[in-house]
Image 1 (cartoon, rainbow, N blue to C red):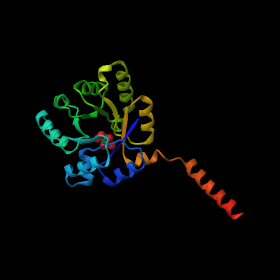
Image 2: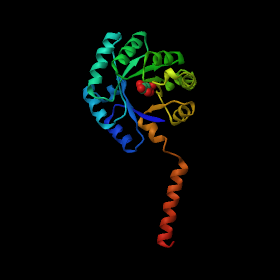
Image 3: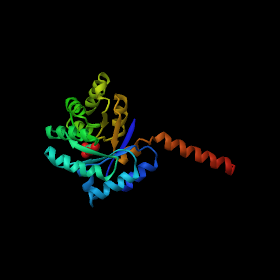
Image 4: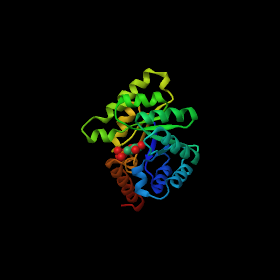
Length: 218
Ligand code: E4P
């Protein structure tokens, strides 16, 4: 399973990459707004930090506008993936990007049918938003589970990977992995939380104490 960092913060990306578990990065306009500056320069820097896919999101509502924005992003680096919202215009843009050999990540997926449509249009990644569904008392993981099951039935969807997005906590990652998501994108905080257990901390403290006792003879 692949892990992406869901952030536009360079320091966070460097930290996660140093841990050796980061396979790519997803950004969106809200994450970019937290850091500011030039989006293009930021994307160039992120693409220099990881060889993995780096999602850059378009803002236009119409297919022509999305394609124009996405083509410009794709020129920044070969690992750019153009992030396109799930709309009919988005589907058209995805199919045009596919014809041009530009990879896409269809974002704002909240149903299995939306994911299926995006995969059929040619998206290389589809992003069901688990946390935002949980936020409105729906079960976000159901969408991941349904899509993973659908993908098992059809070889013609093999070009596309299920990317569990809007991850809020480590349990979302475990459940996404169990359901068969190919990728989970998460904030650095969640990636770090995944390393934690109180018994690990207790065990380290105990080993240190015993080591000191043995060495000090007490
Ligand atoms: C990533 O591709 C998504 O844009 C992101 O995971 C959304 O997360 P949020 O629901 O926490 O904003």
